Every structure is written in structure tokens, then in C-alpha cells.
Image 1 (spheres, rainbow, N blue to C red):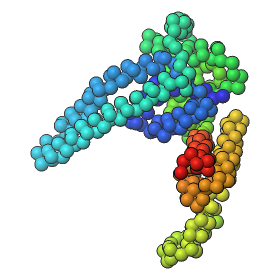
Image 2: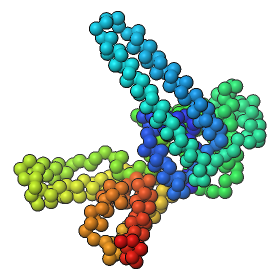
Image 3: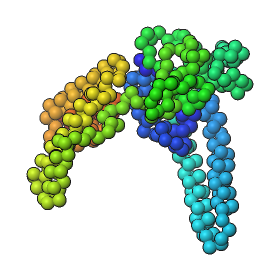
Image 4: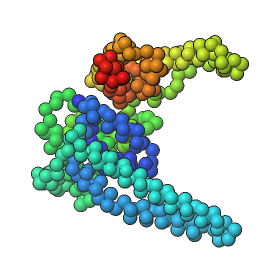
Length: 362
């Protein structure tokens, strides 16, 4: 089982959308995996309290920061001939502030509802955790030990207390926080990207953890062929050239559509091989097995749909939307969240066609 902890600063990034790496799509993908019980999301009550505090300070923060932007514009230049530009920029800033506040509040409501739902594991902030945290702080068992670190200790000991009662033996633990100085040490591996590990003082008492500083990197295990670079070689180049020539000379011909289908088929074949070669080997056996199971279920459901008497040409035309706009042959290579959504969609699709056959719906 994959267990995930996400710090409050990551949820704040999702709500603000002020920086890359925590896009809404990654949160939606995580939500899909949690709801399908592929991932267990751990939510210390401390995180909920911090998010509540940030929500209360929301308007004050935005007023202050956007006020500084307006002030800087007012202080820029003295030439009266550009005064209209200043007024325009201030108007835009005001509009963006209102949009930011509205979007934040909507995302806060969505995230809060999900974090407090039955799908997540909430870890209550108890007197025992408070005592554990203060002991940890007094003993210096934190990378940074000062009075400002108490909330971090409460997070750590919330997680420790949870795993003390956890009966799972095979655990993959993902720890996601921007505050790597408070929780992690940087790896010395020579790569283009910075790599962090959970600090030894924190790792003690927890399952072996992987550390991430944003949702994008944490959700790497769930990606599909869509996130890989588009394959390109001589075969694709030739097929692309034929397609382009026919597109310029006779785009309505049957030959053009044959060339288009051949090109798409070739790209998908190459992408599938690239996915199997470059990404699948990096996955844990549990994730590989889950992908196989979901892919098999999707193929079985699709077969059952096509066996329904109500299935016809119109059904085939609508199939692409049921498959989350993924080509049928690429189902085994799509992202893990997409596999979950596709199986759910096909279950609904099969149910509709079965009811059509029994006359429950027309």
C-alpha cells in the first residue's frame, strides 16, 4: 500500500496556483487514487488547523501583497503621459486580486471537504502527540530545534503514532513538503535535479520514506505515456511527410485519412514501447500489478459493452470520450488515475447498455 503525507504548504500552493509543480490536475489525480483506495492519504489534524488559520488570514495576505504591487506602480516614473497606463495596470491588479481570492476560496472548500472525507485517514491532534512533540524538541531530535519548530514536531509524531498502529507490512511512504530545510537532507547524487531524503532524525520511527518538494514529482509513479516525450524516428518522419503532403494536396481523400491513421498508429506503437522500456521498470511490483489489473478490467468491460445488442456505430463514435480521450490500444500505457477513471466510465457505459437491453431506459 502507498501511504502519502502532504504538508500544509503544498495544499496552499494548490489553492494559490502561484508556482508550478502543484497544479490542480495533480491534486485531481491524487484524489482519484485515494478514492479508489490505491493510495492512503494521511491527514494530521495539525495540517487542517494550519489550513484553517491560512484561510482566516487570506484576505489580509492578498490585500497586503497586491497593495505592494499597486504602490510600486505608483512610485514608478513621473511622466504624466503614461498616467493612463498606471491606472490600467492598477485596475488589472485589482481584478486579479478578486480572481485570486475567489479561486482560493473555491479550492479551499474543495480541498477541505476532501481532506475531511471518509476517504482519508485523519490523525487527531491528541495530548499524547503534544507530549511526544515537546519531548522530541527538548531532545533535539529535529533538524532544526527551536520554539518555532513545535508544529513540525507535532506533524512528525502524528505520523509516527499512526504507523505504530499500522498492520501493513509492505509500505511505500511518500512525504511531500516544500520545507526541506525542516524535514530533509539533500542527496549528493549527481543529477540535474535536486534530490532530497527524509532527515535521519525524522526517519526514525517511520517507514522508509521518499521525499518530494511538490506534487508533480510525488505523482511521478502514477504517470503514463502522455508525460513522456513524443517519439520520433525515421519511420515516423516518413509517415509524417506523407501525411503532410496529402494534407496540402488532397485533404478530403480516403488516402489522406489512411495516412493519418497510419501515422497515429505508428506513433502509438513507438510510444507504447518507449513507456515499457523507459518507465515501467522504475515502478514497484505493486503498482505494476495494479496497472495490469485495471487494464485487464477495462478490456473486459469494453468487450462486454460491444457484446450488447444496443452497441452500434454511434457507440463506437462515443467510445473515445468514455476512454478519457485515450486511444483504445494505449489503455495499458495511460496514467494510473486515467486507468481508474476509464474502468469507472466503462462500468457506467456497460450499465447503460444493459438497461437499454432490458428496456429500463430507451
